[in-house]
Length: 278
Image: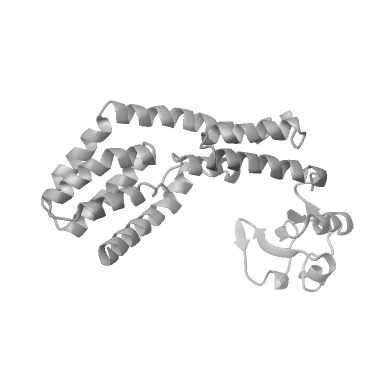
């Protein structure tokens, strides 16, 4: 929870340590926002000023006590804790188990299994229809609705195959490790546009042929494709990335910033491990 130092507060000019804040309310300050700057270190010893915004971490009960008893702070967002439903825990566990059994034993499509579990939760009143509706991230739905046809079109029209052949033919005769690196990069790019399964099916025959021409191990080339098509950190085009894009309020630039370095590390480690140990 975030709290602001109020005007004429007794905390002004003093520190949280002076008020024995952590022992009184059992909450931990994580950061202080002041005049456009964020302070992180030794927060309990920082003299406070009017208008400081303090980010606290603690249990909901302790944060509610802080809100009621400490008049020197004002929470920016009222604390509204949803009531727990312990009597519904068995129903929730039951429908989760049903979904897992349908997936693992009966091999039913994942979306059908999870939708069945969701409907079961509504029918047993673990969730209301309004709660289920609010839980849907419509931005993610529309994102995937646009990306999936794009990937299918790229694959069905032969565009993906043409690009793959062009790139692999351009590199010509190179050492095996360079070929493996190019294959890893190409697999990473393709999995951002089409599904990882589609990218694997498309690229494996091509890279096997290229590896045989370059007198490299085709099994290693195929293995690199199989692993590198999971290297989808740069854009929210993968379903998993899209799922936490909404709740985390991330933008595409956030994925590019964090995912670019992560993808490079992924490729370097992948090539090194496969080249050295296989």
